[in-house]
Amino acid sequence: MGTARCGRSITIKPPGDKSISHRSAMFGALAEGETVVTNYSPGRDCAATLKCLQALGISIERQGDRVLIKGGGPGGLREPVDVLDCENSGTTMRLLAGILAGQQFMSVLTGDDSLRRRPMARIVQPLLRMGARLDGREGGLKAPLVIRGGGLRPLEEYALPVASAQVKSCIIFAGLHAEGTTTILEPVPSRDHTERMMALFGGELRAGGGRVCVRGFQDLRAASLEVPGDISSAAFWLAAGAILPGSDIRIEGVGLNPSRCGFLRALQRMGCEMEFSGLRDEWEPSGDVRVFGGPLAAIEVPPEDVPALVDELPILAVCAAVARGKTVVTGASELRHKESDRISAIVRNLQAMGVTAGETPDGFWVEGGGRLRGGSIETRGDHRIAMAFAIAGLAADGETALDDPGCIAVSYPGFMETLEHLKESL
Image 1 (cartoon, rainbow, N blue to C red):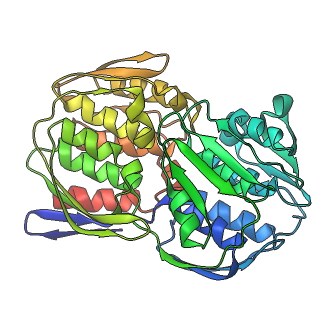
Image 2 (tube, rainbow, N blue to C red; image 1 turned 135 degrees about the vertical axis):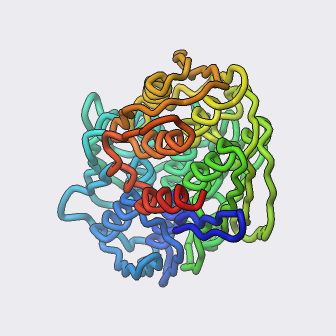
């Protein structure tokens, strides 16, 4: 996860993908046999998933970025003796809720202050319709969540109110423990890591035409897999390459799943010069991406584009700040319910750096093209806000200071070290 300079080009290898790491551990726990995962994400969120699975009776051995998971197959999980602490990880809580809803025991999911404030209605409502027994704060809609599992029935057709890979995956995991076939309808496609990984672990799932169908009580078998680099983490270095004139940054071995490449497409629309090489298309596509610094132009991001780059919108806003014209993002109200209200955090911090920007109920706008000035950044304990504005500091006049750089360790512990290497190499 360091940097190396080759001529004028800088190469960065991002950490393993968070979304895929979470799912690999969960599928490994449900499968029969020993699953071996390499390049597992080093972030605290993914470590929280491993701790929760261990508390559910799964034997897990971690050797750096290599994780060995001894799954128990059907009935292999056991009732935990204490609450399951998901820490800051919404993915851990939402996906585990789907798994636990089908188990014949009681469990309690909790997390830190931020996670306990995040709404869980989108998973609670479909799980209740499947016959799960759940309770929690504010009428069962916020953590801690108490789940008394077992006896699930399938959802014949469940239309997701908004595109959400976490909600979709929660229902898929619950559907694996329901008698019959569960069908999920998506308004627009969201990331499909769960669907791809189902096949890798020997399961059957049908997806297409906005429908995802999963049959219950399938036997999953252990697998060996290498997690590709995290495109959401790589996005910060891609942005650095795009906004710094004359730069040449290559990202090595990053995941290129089309459902996650919205940020790459957005950068290309803004005029960023980009090259791809070393492409592989196995269970998850991956390859190398090289970006070159140059002038950028403003774009519009409509609602249908948001699911493929929702995690990258903070760093896209930084790119918009240096792009000529007015960038407008709509249909992104989900950003208000992340680790922080990201719409508010993006706009306030851009304004602190001298950028004209504003909020809308479901998005934001940025008048770009001027010089950024250094400033004091309120991260609000949100790792993606912290990393986005650390990158903004590279293009700013004067010093940029983050009030809580430690929050970055949630997803990318080596980020600040790599940032320092990048500064030295530029």
